[in-house]
Length: 104
Image (cartoon, rainbow, N blue to C red; front, side, top):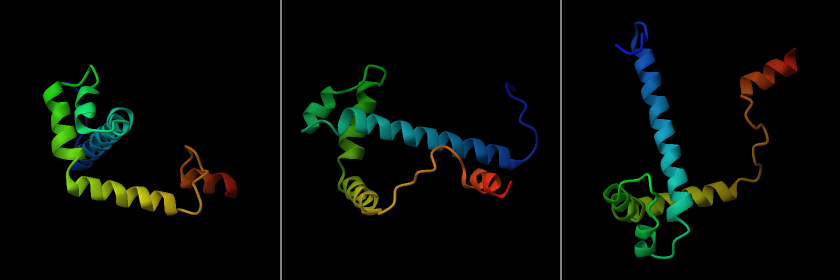
């Protein structure tokens, strides 16, 4: 094996969670940088980044981001984000770290 991860399913689960999170955030950046700025699906199709396979990009444009289900989810999430009265000002510090610093 390339990596010695030790025993336990928690390591595998943690890796899956981390990979899933990284992939989701990467797709979000792709959408905001290349898809959301386009006015039509044809324009979005031609906005394919160089490092993305054109067939995979077309699938994202036509079969994922432009579906009714995904558009509804996106609108709902946008409305929820805009309705927040208080924006987080913690930055990169975790809540646990902030509490520890306050107590110390």
